[in-house]
Amino acid sequence: MARRHQPRGKFQTRGYRKAQRQSARLQKKVARQRTDTGRRWAKAVVRDHDRVAVEDFRPRFLAKSTMARKAADAAISATKKALVEMGRKHGRDVRLVHPAHTTMDCAWCGARAKHALLLSERTYACSACGVVSPRDKNSARVMLIRAGWNPDGVEGVRPGQALPDLAA
Image 1 (cartoon, rainbow, N blue to C red):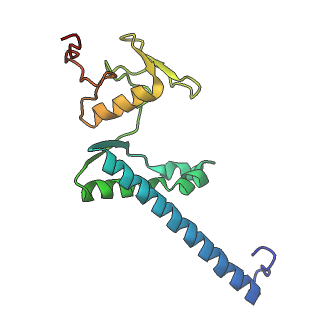
Image 2: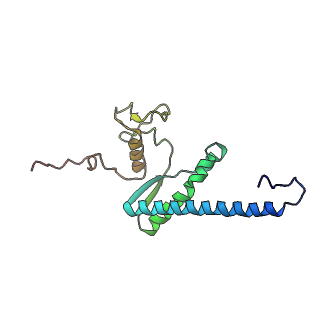
Image 3: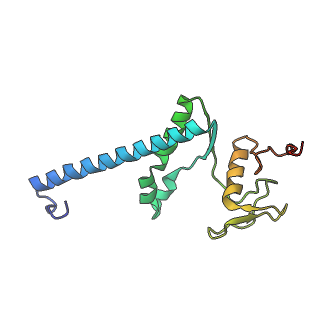
């Protein structure tokens, strides 16, 4: 289109208009592919899980940053919308969690870290209770707690319950 573009004030050529239609057709195809991929992913997640907690991520603030195109390419909002829609359709509990400070809060005691963690720091160490856990697992537990659910422990047992006696 750039090669066929006429200066301002002149009519665009037939080649430019044809290239414009081609570009619009390609963009529409890509948008449909992203929507389809998001819906397939959402259906798989909803089919495999009874309850889903997801960050209520709003990518509007990314429009002012260099991440804008990446966020648009990932179709974050459309995928989240598809997940909520599929959850309602299949009778699953999908809850949106406010994303603020999910990586800074401790999932066990609720204390917040005094400073923001760098992305290179992969473990979360709570200064209040001393718990050390992988950063992503801590964040996932925080999201489950904010959704109002008591997350399972590592052993598959809810906190506060005794482990099954395997010797008997």
